[in-house]
Image (tube, rainbow, N blue to C red):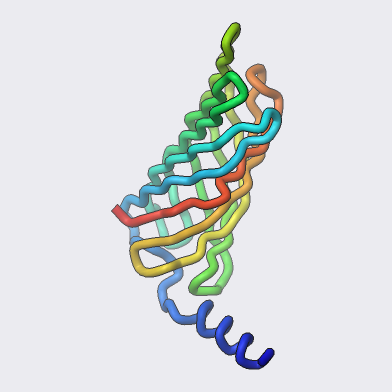
Length: 158
């Protein structure tokens, strides 16, 4: 039974030959749903990326944390670098720089957004990927630190 399980896992992770969706010059759109902590909010995270090379994607990211009587919003430029040799599971690191906005019933503020994240993508087919990434966000003076986690992100070739 253990051998069968290992065989199935091996087939699952090795059945796609390509390491990336898209090629240089393509665009990838994505949408993620998850949570923001400190305060705890519901996260919606759309992203548009340009494939610069097989391992580097450049793009724009919006993060919208909704709930708790307020809204936390960031708009940033991003760079994502993929590494590893597995054709199905693609680990990545991400850096972001942009603006943040926090608004509640009685106040609002604007600040700088600096983000760093790490996660992975799982290649479903040549045009579709599902993944997750945990981002550490620094946004002084809006909110000194918060964590955003789009638990499920669907990426697709445009």
